[in-house]
Image 1 (cartoon, rainbow over the protein chains, first blue to last red):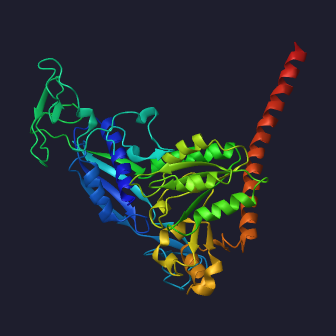
Image 2 (image 1 turned 180 degrees about the horizontal axis):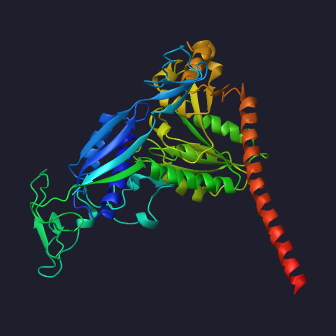
Image 3 (image 1 turned 135 degrees about the vertical axis):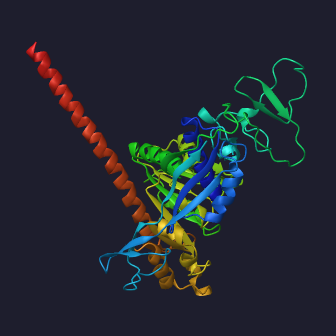
Length: 113
Length: 339
């Protein structure tokens, strides 16, 4: 599953930052995943645990925050909430939607010692 | 995964050769999960003794070793740590470091590099994605034959194992590079960057990247292509766009393949298109058959438009460069005349 590749991406970012900050240990990694992001959070957490073994981030807590999805509804000419890809506009029922937010996957902060 | 550089490409093979080179050329050591930087042969003493299972380097240059029981987890010692720094027990200087980085930043950087390399040569590059068995390779073979003499085609093939697909492409006379991902489920931009240097597409050529057959994972990875083209065959069911939204959301063109089989299957073409356009309202759609050739003219026309646009964009860039050179030459001539 591609969450392995994503977890490796998180680890790389964390290791670079830990090295730059002369950290001896990373105890927490705060990550933000949009509601529409192409990732399964539980799978990411599982893979994160596996890929960090033996690194400065071994045993680190992965804190995952979900951010909501929004889209621009073309018939409504308005921004509307979007729970998942394939949902219709909650106001008018159209599928003419352009995703605005919710597909991001970001490492926000790390807690180090 | 290598914990030294974080690359996950230890199992990837391009034309049978493992992916090393540059900063990634180092040992991918054993599987007890510890960082490779900790593995060293102890200096002095009984130097012929076998390397202990697990060693730590302290900041003062001394080593200590553990004996592992089967499956035991490592417990950190005060003063010992993977980066070699020490800290006093009981004092923890906890800090929060702000990162704000896209998890896929590294892949996207490789993808941008690929995109620029392709643009410099005026190559139109497509990322073909689908389930296994949708007819991608057959479609490619027919496409190469149809464009023969008009547009040179260069192919990167992605599969877990074998070079069967690259072999089929090469049989048409086109150049192909096979990437084997091992246990990997998708191509990424790093692999494609290496494959592109081996492929060495000619100026103005069409580059086709046939991704690993997988309707889920490849959607997340930009390879540097101009478009993702999703291929859905009529034997797979009209509801696939609803069940696999990310792939259809990521695509710019959908090819509905194997339409010669429509009389024999329960496939609702209009429904499939409507479902796919729920995920991607502007999705273009072409229905065709790679075996009968029905609908192929529209696909070839779409390709040739893309090839022409890529060549035109490169020419525009060269045009700008030529204008600048002409300006500088004029300045030089004026300066020489004045002296």
